[in-house]
Length: 314
Ligand code: BDR
Ligand code: CA
Image (cartoon, rainbow, N blue to C red; front, side):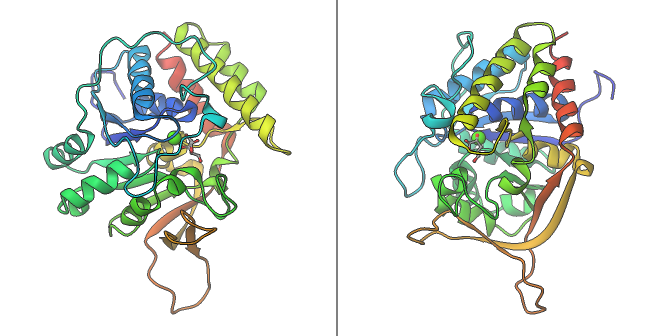
């Protein structure tokens, strides 16, 4: 694609950077028409995730606006993930100061207006689903207007609890609204993202690139991987979850998917936030509503990440 041609795939990336969200921003900037970045409280409080999103936007030299959104889940109290991402949400690198504040604190309004103004927008949430749920509730017409939603979250196993993955556990009520919205839905859960790890040789591929962006990202990936290694028995590098939700759209051939009925458990004492994936072979199961990503060509997907970083390192 020539640099003057617009990317064909319009998306809004709704994120809580987050080391892996930062990588998702790079891949989205390279391979989509990134209409805007919206932020949500998740890995860290909203002011930190918004700051990190602006820093990434600056490092990439993007025009895309950054709009801050929900500072807490719909019902649950705010709970963050400093044990994985550090208190700043992106610990481990010498980050520049953000060049300017967010364009607004109305991410939900931005999502609604943008989806009404552009045909076929994909929403790509890589944090708790609060902003997306609020937008769908405030503007029910969005469900039929958008091209779909590509979520990072869920899986047949959990990370925050035995049953639940962090993004959906953090705001199960919002996740329930999104998974039942009725339109195209892709889920990149832990089954696939744990197969996509920042192994040491993969981080070195990033570090060998010139410039500040690559230096920052390789330091971030080192920190992220170290927290994974310190917390897991059997993992060599961090699971780089969030770019999978972007590449599900931009590089679908790199993934294997199963079309399933998926619902969110909202009330379980031990299972809140769990994706209940109906894998029964029965004819009477409810209609499938979700493309569940189950496997990835990790080397090829990492090449996409490295090429995207290299593109912005020239
Ligand atoms: C998800 O939670 C966060 O730690 C990551 O950024 C990712 O979006 C993985 O469970
Ligand atoms: Ca995230």
